[in-house]
Image 1: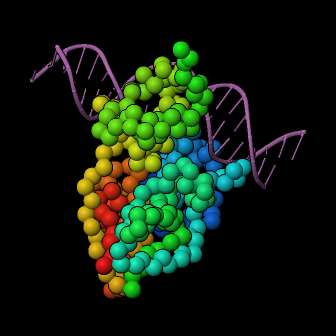
Image 2: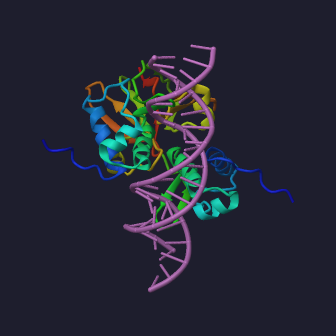
Image 3: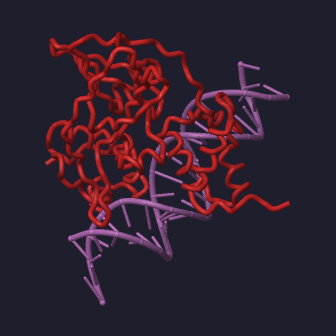
Length: 133
Length: 133
DNA sequence: CGAGATTTGTGCGTATGTATT
DNA sequence: AAATACATACGCACAAATCTC
């Protein structure tokens, strides 16, 4: 009974969990193993496990629920944002203020819609999809 | 000559540097003070400094260059991506593979352009801007 | 060309705080 | 009240990349 291949660093651990999410071994809404469980399973320090988790959060793959754990992010229903001629759209990470105001989770970028008038609006990338007619 | 207000945690340090970047005290291409300098200036541990820097990095504000320092990111020239009727565009953080393939820095999201045929393309958000005619 | 200094990257140990179950 | 789980924050050591001399 061969053991799992050794996981030597936080990037490998993150890659392993990314595969598990991609392959459906970890499903949306499901809780990841706790930090303690992961360090015991792979014989890693807490620091290494936390680095891996931080990387998954920055990619928007998992959410942290206080007092509960890390949860695979569930897709949310998307609204169509109809783009009109003359508009310009860029994308970037939101500022701290925008994250608070629009309740944007970690690792979720925003659309920045610029109108010909010079005014602009912010649309969280996890809830809006652009379309053109 | 009152000293700076005390910086008590990594969020405050990150906010301070965000202000300095926003106000032009730190300009694009300019190197930030080193981790050692920041810990001495504000009497913080390396952990706290690195945590603050990681947050700026996730926001796409700074680049790390190992052996050199942390640099305020410079804007790159943007190409216009003309969106045709029937296309759909979403935004998200790139995967590790997409980051490598397209040479996408930290904290930069991508446009995901979906064509009516079902095919799709990836466009780095720091180099492309969408427009409609 | 190399040697050394500088700077960030990775990894570990420990302690305490806060929120949830 | 207790256990669980992550957040914050200090310390240390060594590796790897870059620059300067």
